[in-house]
Image (cartoon, rainbow, N blue to C red; front, side, top):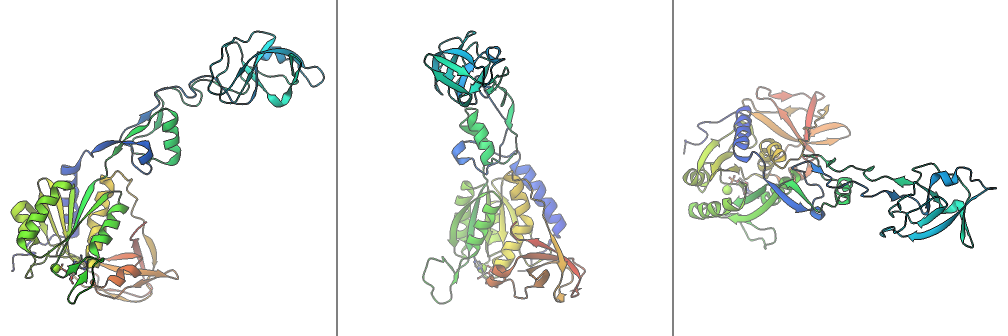
Length: 408
Ligand code: AMP
Ligand code: MG
């Protein structure tokens, strides 16, 4: 043993290394063209412009009669204008006749305005009498007509690059006759659990075994960052098996996250495997929990070897992966909102390492969760964590702390 953690890095250095690795490997982000039906919540990779005027023609916005406004200038309840109807124009039809003075066309909402007409009088203010149409109200030119391009002229930007596709944006894009949009491809994140003791939650428990929870908590955390998790399953603490699995699975994903086997105990083979297939960049971060973390590179892809303890795995994910994955998936960096509240009781920490302590918020007070990082229930109870600086040993009851919530 002994060689592990020789080069323990502090959290700031780890961030700076990770940031430049992401920049070097994953920029610019991959783009894919997808059907609008699947685009909800995705991030636009380019501005989308309208290829047409909207509406594409001068369009009736009421049911009524299309006519020349000047024919109605003196119309009133007592003295209606009298016009002849020459055509009925339904929505979707093309007008065939030109409207001249003294004439009108019956028109439905959404139909194109016939040539010669410059206004619509609503059906409610008209009456049909034999061959005549009586118009009881005057109209002004342009009344109830949506001119071509008035909603959105051709080439106008409908939705901006980097915007998240909402129902409204999807509606506006479809209205312009666009059915596919360029979006930032969801990064594929492989998730692999390592450990002889692990079994799938769907299996029957047998003595000595532990259900794999990291695969599932990490997959959810990956989704929460706008990425696509691919659960690769469980692999035993066996050099050859881990080697083969990592070598194969790295091809299918952009980033590989493993959990377990990152220390230097018997059966901890991860460091050796990554070293042999690729390169270990960090082994050991000065942080609690989660010190035995490995960051490596294989075939120009990043591998994050998280410690097996469920709390450690999720804290390391939250601190060292979440911000970068969110950026990679194009999700606007939800600024890391923290909530500042007083501690409900005193908290002891250890000197020399930044300590991330799980906490629960109740009645506007912050309760440290005092179970160890192997306790899965501490995660289920936790609302988030607080960061205790390296050189602080005790946080007193009542002192204000900043809680980082796990999910926002
Ligand atoms: P390791 O990092 O492999 O030394 O594992 C540390 C602890 O975390 C051990 O108690 C493991 O049983 C536990 N552990 C490792 N991987 C998982 C996992 N995928 N799900 C739940 N617990 C795990
Ligand atoms: Mg293990």
